[in-house]
Length: 452
Image (cartoon, rainbow, N blue to C red):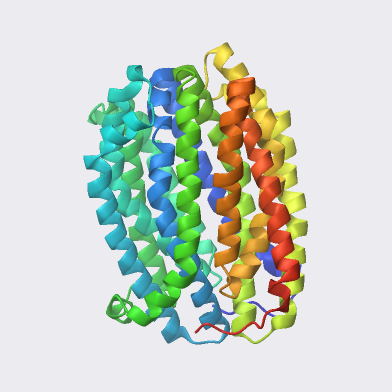
């Protein structure tokens, strides 16, 4: 496995890195989408509402791991750009062990306090028991999910986006085959009802991780789970200090975003279980656009980190400009498709015409603003490649806590449910303006140095 060639056109390097990641995001979103279709069509709208209530709760814990992966990815990218594979293993081992510990803590706390959390969110009474039952299972399978998510992030630090994609193919195929089988009790399997998707997801994750270990060992991959890799599974304070310096602010940002989603969900829940189901369906569509935009930002960050590690600082500007252009083409194209196909797409999850009409209106209000979200994420990703994360994170948090949530409450009072969705474009525009100003006025004038 080689570091990206400096002679290859940058857009080709971007697309070779980005294409498998976007396909991975598509598979992740498709898996959630098809499971939601299974639940909505085979178990009903109330079951979909119960499962939808868990989206922000699960994301809360995933946010911590995403932060760790972001910090480790920058360090691994710089070490890989400097051609130091021993440091790559050391960073990955320390980060992965910490991720395992987070997963175990999440499983215990999440399962113990599931009912209290869902009640506090205002989950409608008619779906609360089902939501709690689903939450208990989901929390106990969370450690395997977190380890899988974190390890795929680490692989991307060495420019390997193909292995995570293939592992997701395994996970998705197993999960999607088992979910309806568990719902209906096919082939002598138990009928698990609303918990079917969670158990199927666990089987898919375990199968994918086993296959991934086999592939990496066979290819003598720098992150193969061999004796040297397991020897690196220790909580190295120096390495974790650097990982947390970058990753903790990113994790805090993700947590604030997840908390804001909890507040948004609580606002939505006040309007009825029909509104909760519409929220779940809209979230599915938004994921297809938002995750590719985030993938472009991750690509910019990793390529930037590798350029810094290789001492090629002159590539930072072109990496940013290429990322912004790809955001226009890819994210913009997905937004257009989202508007054109919204009625049909939402009908995949929602069988009631009134609920589908509600969801379509809400989607149309905020979908366009994901282009702005992508721009600001890419600018933040470039700055994160150098270890600059604190101010970009503060900007994002201020825009969420100080702009989006107050706007959501006020607009909810003025316009009802649709007002909640109007707050998203306002927040994303604020993020873009402030991130751009900081990049232009401060970051570009700072000295950039290797972190490892």
